[in-house]
Length: 414
Image 1: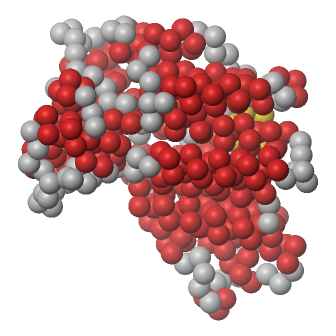
Image 2: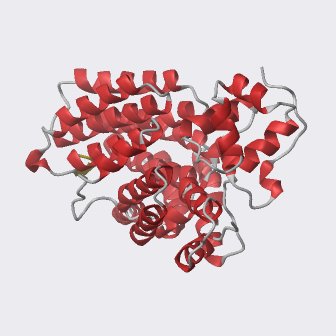
Image 3: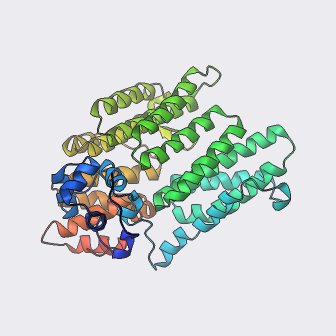
């Protein structure tokens, strides 16, 4: 059982690396390193290296550490990253508006103002989806609060049931995009609320594929607290519903089924279950072979196909502490021209982390720069991108001008 600790936020300790934050919170909790390792079911050697800033923690390590310390992954990573930089403030600014829209989702009908015509709202939803796909967080944030409010009003004020179902689907879509934004920026409390709202809207849309997407999203709450079994059960149940629904056919169904398999592979890798990870990657590959033209497709915000299967395979090897296999697999990844920038950026960060684990400093920085080039806002707020850059400055004696420029752009102090 975790030891009681005084009220404390490691975010108050300044611009520290993740390991230093873990060490600070561990000491305040009254743990020695060995006691903490035992309580969190972690290797003592890994705890020591991570606290010294000599190794990057895996996602699974962070979740186990947070659970043992009665903390959160966001607290350990220092999220949300909010500097005085105007660009950062622009990205974080809309979060309060999203909170308001989430809170006011089921007020009596007289509380809602008359929204714009539905065609205008649909156009804005399509624009928001493009911003999400391109990892343009600041532009996405500008659109979402108002869209959530107007779609909520349109749903509650509508009288035609078929129209209300369509609006509920649009609303679920916006909740999904808001969830992604809140998750990437580190607002853990808000992501849980958005999952609930999305499931509420998807059920009213009467759309099996949107309901599957809502369950895919819901798995994040379980994952965040290290409940890998719960996350896998949610995903398996959603997949089995789709697999048994003969009325749902086509590429969109394959995309959602494949995306659930890939999410299952990620959860299994967090749980350090290499066999289960490989099983889900293999099943996802079988589904990818059924994609028309063999090219990744986008349906219901999910991108699925051979390239995305390869990307998840790379990420799984990184999480399973197999950086050599990750780098080898990454050499075969070829992105189609229209691949979502969010997926490309996340991939480059994972490959940078693998190269750092292999002590390949220049390659690690090169991939971080690729992530920045393809998805700058995503990279700037990505915890592992920040920690990889920070470690590059502390693990080696010589800091290059190229690296200093990158860490200055991130807004971190080595």
